[in-house]
Length: 272
Image (cartoon, rainbow, N blue to C red):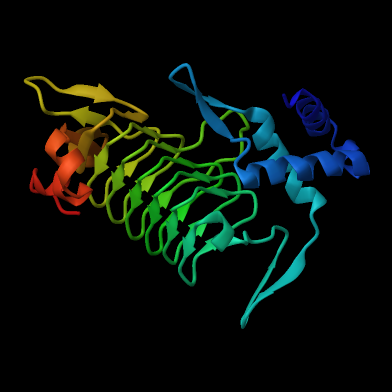
C-alpha cells in the first residue's frame, strides 16, 4: 500500500542529498502526517508478533533535518523547536490537562487523557489510556488501550538504531508510580507493575511463584504482577545486591472485571 513511500524513504536514508529535493521532502512530511493520524505505526502486531516498520522510523529521522527551527507561542508560553505540537484535541476526543505536551507525529486515540505529561513523536497511545502527571512516553513507544501510566512513569524512546524495537505496553496494563521501562521491553496485556519497577534490556525478570524460579529477559508475560526486587551478585570487591524484577503472581479474573487495577497490587500487599 505504501510501496512508493517506502522506496523514497529508503533511498533518502541511504543518500541524504536527496533531502534537498522538494519531492522527497513532500513524501517525508506526508509519512509523518500519516503517523500523526494513526494510519501507520512504528510497530504493529502481525500474526501475534510485534514487528518494527523500520521505514517509518527512518522517515522520523529524516523529518528532523528538513524542518527549520521556529518559535511557537501558546498563550503566555513560548517554545523554540523544529516539530509542531499536536492540535485539534476536541476533534480527536482527547482530554489534555495543562501543561501536557504531545508532539506532532505522535498518535493519541479517542478517550486518551493526558495529565501534565509528555508524548514524543512516533509514539502511539491507545483508547482510554491515561498518561498521568509527569509521565513521559518516549519516541516510538507503543502504549495499548485502557492503560494507566501512573505519576512519574518513564517510558523510554528509541529512534536509532532503526531496527531496534520500541517499548511496548500491552492493553489493560497498570504501570505504577515512578516505574521506568526502556530499551525495547515488552509488557504483555494485563500486566501490573508495582511502584519503582525498573525494566531494561539487562534486567533479570524472575517468576518466583513456583517451586523453582523462572527467568525472563526483555518481556513481562501477560497478567503478571511485578514488583522491584534484588539478588546477590559477586564482584571482585565482594558480593552486592543488584536490582531485578519479581513476578509474584497473576491478576485475578475478579480484579479484571470488578475492581481497579490498583487492587491487583493490593491483593499481594504491594505499594501502588
